[in-house]
Length: 564
Ligand code: ATP
Ligand code: MG
Picture: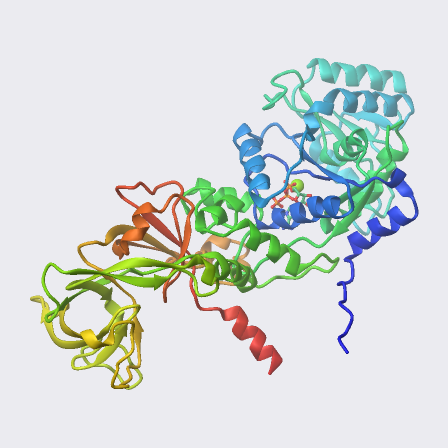
């Protein structure tokens, strides 16, 4: 008897939403939001949050808003707003008409502040930032009330209005919530709600010189939009009481609730936007979309597919326990997707010339090559075969060690989709380096089989020399050499940068079908890995390919070991 098909158990977020729907909460609505701050490009950690927020909305018949949390004018830029939208779309999600900016709510946020002041729940504090820190106390010691805490509401109102009017310099005063300076939760010790910042905002220009803090703006923005489940990462758990306090003390149009999940951490990767910005600004990578970056734009340029990234997010799941995910799992997901979909082609990265002495000069044969053995419906294509070919430099050794089965003097191998080839001589340059192989082929072995049944131990990829496309190929390795970059260097992750993370090969020779490849197209170069056409630097006259990932799969090995 077959076991009944089991549905995987819901993660805790989906369980909560499912229970809420069953209980008839939120009038049966589900509305989530993805709230990036436009101060950098999105990274693979954001992908986890995007897949979760947009994913649950889709699964439960709800909607997900894209909301820019743009409350800090000093670090935010329009470039980031654009890149974030492009990246969310690329991942395959759509916010429809529901594109919002926290800055759209600046007036409402201001009105809410007036409300709190009138209610005696917020006050203008003249202490300096440093004094506020001192007064806050510690985890073991309660804080002290500010001398300005008891200011009458009328005075607070007057001062706050004048803060808005621009009467005071940056840092002169702040608006604080009046909660509890002795609370065991430091976030409730009269948190700052507004600060003075005479700074140009990317959307509101110089209209405002006071800006709300995230912890204050976020719950109100959620309420404005009617968010039902405000999902964020665990570091906000201790902020939840403030989220609740804000909404419980204001006449908001809707009452959302916050839920926290564990953020994604990846080995060999830094993910904080501050660190990624540092890599960009210090020229340690070639921009936010450098294919070595863990940004979505970098991964896209590297050739990672949205399907692979979504599948990865699915596999890692959603929980409440902090952990570090192996980068190899992400690479596994990329391989798995590309293996299914990438057309196979032949390309030689480090070419070594082969002259087939018994092949007629000037003759070119078109041989059939399989496009994708995983998908026979994709058929075959023609590859030219001629007297002069290139093979991979490392597929030949003049003095082969015992376990080297590829080409060597006097030895025979198979050329993929073609013939048996035998090396009968080598040509060297002045330095003794082998620069050309003299070979013969066996016309009886067309298609790769010998009628006399003799075997060869290796099959090599190759391209016809005269017909080949010359291309630049960029090979990538991990950006960091250590699983936890910076750990052994007091956090200076730059000390663990991999000096060999990029290798550029200028003279690669690819089969002629690749002349038609377009930016973003992906392929498997047989025996070498998955590659894509670089979307930025490649031109038809000077094609550039990125290696997305090698063919080797350390993750599969790790899993097998686990099973043994
Ligand atoms: P960083 O710490 O990398 O600078 P951030 O949290 O400041 O990122 P935001 O723009 O505020 O970046 O993030 C938008 C959303 O993405 C937030 O809800 C945040 O919780 C979520 N997010 C950010 N990093 C991760 C991560 N590594 N894993 C899961 N979700 C994340
Ligand atoms: Mg943040």
